[in-house]
Each structure stands twice: as C-alpha cells, then as structure tokens.
Amino acid sequence: NAGVTQTPKFRVLKTGQSMTLLCAQDMNHEYMYWYRQDPGMGLRLIHYSVGEGTTAKGEVPDGYNVSRLKKQNFLLGLESAAPSQTSVYFCASSYEGRHGELFFGEGSRLTVL
Amino acid sequence: AQSVTQLDSHVSVSEGTPVLLRCNYSSSYSPSLFWYVQHPNKGLQLLLKYTSAATLVKGINGFEAEFKKSETSFHLTKPSAHMSDAAEYFCVVRGTGGFKTIFGAGTRLFVKA
Image (cartoon, rainbow over all chains, first blue to last red):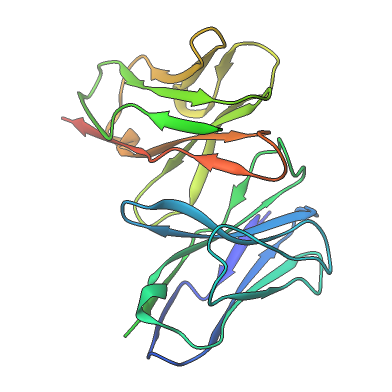
C-alpha cells in the first residue's frame, strides 16, 4: 500500500518558470491538502480539497493554483515561480475532514533561483 | 482562539532514559489530538491519536500520551529513549472548527549515546 506519493521529490526552478507537483493517494480519501514547511514557520496550509472537483484556499494560497480532477490526485501548480516559494511541500490526505488523522507524503523540495 | 503550544523547542536525553515532550492546547471545541514524528528529509508519520476515548493513548515505538482536559495538556512520553527516536515531534489539533488543522511549532529531540 503506497499511501500518499508525491512527485517530483526534488526540483530546481528559475524565477518565472512554472511547474506542477503531483500528489496521488490510494486510500480512497475524500480530503486532500497541500502544505509548505519552512524553518521557523512550521507547516502552513496552501490549498485543500474536500472531494473530487472541489478546491479551497488555505492560509497561504497566493502564487499557487490547485486542481482535483480525480479523487486520487491533487495537483499543485506554480505559474510563475518566485524565490519566496523555495520550500518543502507536503501533500496529505484524510478520510474524515474535521477529526481524522492526516496521512503525509514524503515531501517535495523545491528551490527557486 | 484555538492554539497549540509545544513548551520546548529542543529536548536532549541520554539513550535509555525517559522522554517527555510537552504540549498544551487551547480549544473551544472537543478536539482530536495527535502526535506526529518527522525524521530528517521525511514526511510526518503518525505516532498516536486521541479522539475522546481512553485518555491514555498508546502509540507506535513505545510512545504514549495522556490527555488531561483540566490541564489542557497532551504530553508525549516514552520510558526509554533509543537513538532512532532522534527526530522532530509535532503536536497537532483537529476538530477546532471547519477543516482546520493546528500544528505546534515542533520539538526537536536529541538522543545522546
């Protein structure tokens, strides 16, 4: 059972380039989340989804877009990368949206030069 | 306001001695509480969770935590530290309203040989 899988694991971008991070889960979870983790800032929610075809903004959504076309996949896009988006990105999923435990992927380390 | 406070940013113990990582929370609701562990360059892994059943919760790798409503605390303990326990630990609260998840700032555990 793979759980939550993120691709790619590492990426280096130049300022202004675009890219997409893919998150896939095989647990049939309704809820999926994208977080970024920065030193001293903890984990901050970027966007989340409560089901296929739905997305919602989290704490720090600016500069990111997401899509949930299939229940098992949650894509995070950067249209024009900025150095401030250098971070480690984590995808998570949960069966229940309010009290359920979160299952995390291994993370995607993004560097924007 | 809902919040989570991890009282120590760093804890250092010797191998074979007890571990205590402290967490206090503030919530107007009946929250679910979790402890996660993050090893370097890895995702967050669930150690244990409290969801209003028994107040003493046993988790993986010998960890346990006690929910004390009167003290609004959820401290993590382990009787005997192992070198492999060296990692960062996060206290997490859910069920505080909507789909919000509140992460503590983390406690880094060092284990000395």
